[in-house]
Image 1 (cartoon, one colour):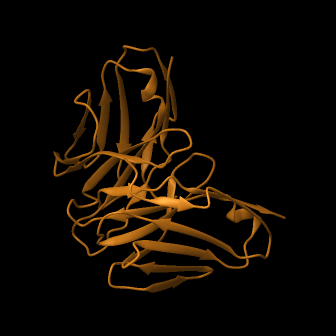
Image 2 (cartoon, rainbow over the protein chains, first blue to last red):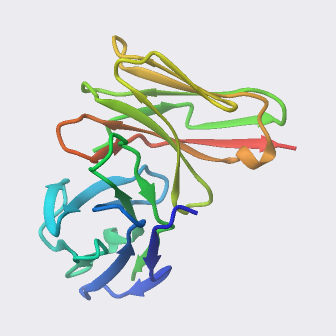
Image 3 (cartoon, helix red, strand yellow):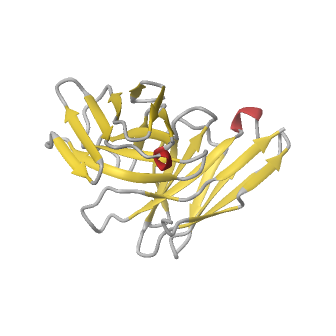
Length: 114
Length: 112
């Protein structure tokens, strides 16, 4: 167990709908990164939040957005869902205050878009 | 896009045997990390090797890094059935803190 939690565990949505996924970072971590993992693929970086601001973004359209709160927890929002958005969404927390580059991943949210 | 390519895509061995997985990447890196994933759940960090290191050990794990060939290998010695999982290498270029670029992974099956 890494101390990173995500909710919900599973989610089924219809194409065109909007979804919000949540992540609570490990105690003491101030940075949250989000990844999308399609079936049979490695995770792909969506974006990262540090001190409540987006700090780096991968090759994802603007309908993928996020928030980070003062307690460092984070949300991932996806608008106008498409079938290809079906994937495992992982968040990872880390701390910039130390020399460690290690990221701690949550168990993920499995999103199915029908 | 995937930075790393892992080889093999799948590996099936008997308990007690060694398992070797390879990872190649395309751009310069700050560090390379290996993760394990069980049954499509969260990733577990195994080991990190920095670009100025050539080999690193952690328990039954041995990782090597060859920056001239842009490749890394993960060796699991004396494998156990509990090692059955997907293994991913991930590179950190150092240009954007915490942005990891993952390979497609190797599925390891260890038969009891």
